[in-house]
Length: 469
Image 1: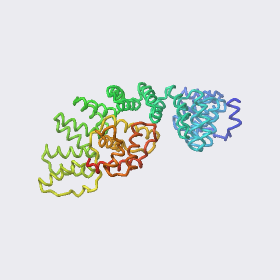
Image 2 (image 1 turned 90 degrees about the horizontal axis):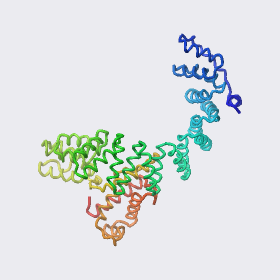
Image 3 (image 1 turned 60 degrees about the vertical axis):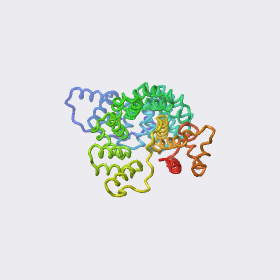
Image 4 (image 1 turned 45 degrees about the vertical axis):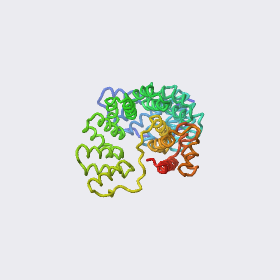
């Protein structure tokens, strides 16, 4: 059936009043109007678009309907958009379906999206997405991949993501990297993140850098971080700052940390302050520590407090920021406050420092562990799932590393920790299990925030029982 025949069979034709528009003074528009009135579908379509651009909705609809009656697919599609915005869903669906039936992939995508979002018709949406994908739409292939993923069809999701990715849809290549990583297939993750990263996807380049960093290849990681940083990726700039700092290249580290800091990263502000102290640029250090401390960073508040006391003899300001850090669980800040009290006779315990503040993790953490933690968070967050903070995962991994460092290989760490700390074995086993999931993805689902909160409490309890902070 032709488009014209299909329209006569499927679409009711209400009488759309002829727009009362003055005769155009512009010769081109007058010629277009005359041609449209004579029955030219292309002229009627162009005239409808002209009125739409002017904001004359009724005139645009009138001429598009005249054009559509004569078989113009573009006008049919535009009528779908018109009714989606100004009419009803049912009318929009009817027009989009007419255009989609001719092989218009964009109309099929709009139709499928409306069916999914307005009607909850998953089967109908999938049918039209598949038709659009068969007509070569990589956008439709990606939507199918996400739809299959929501339905629990892992094989179908990967197949459609691959089809979209090979057609140039970089977001699907990026997603394939995460699907591979979450399944424990790091080779698959590397392949797709490199594919997308080399084509200009900054997040893919950055996460490939993290994966290489986690595999203890910092030089290769730096190349990918730079690829992302050139596209103004602040986390990549921060990572490059860390790599430069590890080499004691302080000026390069400062440049990268300040780049991350200017983009709003609080940890970038703190680390920029730290490097400025190392470079003996105290005013710049104070500037960055102040920004990070004001944003709630406990380590920066501690450093800023010390700097105010040492450089400016500002005991009140220093005491304030040390108290802020101590209230967040920074034990060195609490110790400094006690020292200040002993020296100056100030209050024994500032009012805003709770006695039961949780321990603040301030131990240096292996960069490879930090990379694993960030990859886990990104993998869990990819589809909008609630996930834990990377800092919490870093504390979990770092705690295990801290308390088992130097333990002979012949020892069972769970048994040893249970016997040494007096903590119940299931709690230690749970901590060990979550650690294994973070380090070796694919062995279990990513831990949910509630699970991480429970394991984090175990980690802190272990450190307390073993006399560690």
